[in-house]
Length: 95
Image (cartoon, rainbow, N blue to C red; front, side, top):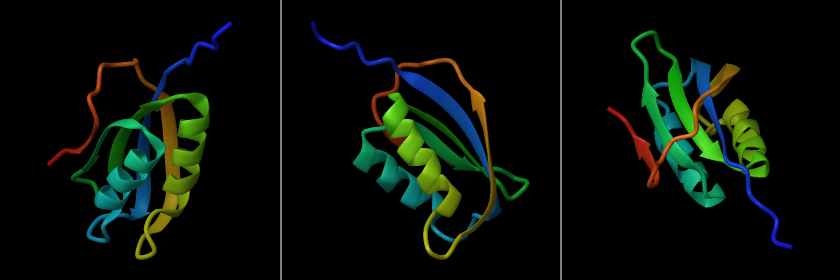
């Protein structure tokens, strides 16, 4: 019997020194490596927002990475919340 993959979607709000340090581009690269779809964008308040979708293991690895980010970032917090599963073709940087 084939195992069914359950897709999970989360919204993440990342705070700290996460703008102007390549966080969005690094997030897209990491998401692509892990096979995650969704998007990432800067917020006016200095945080980064991302919607990430994949299976449980993919999201677990992605969230762990988000707590570190690229070398030049200083992540203070990653807040996660449930988000409806959507049809994403890939992982985009929103502007």
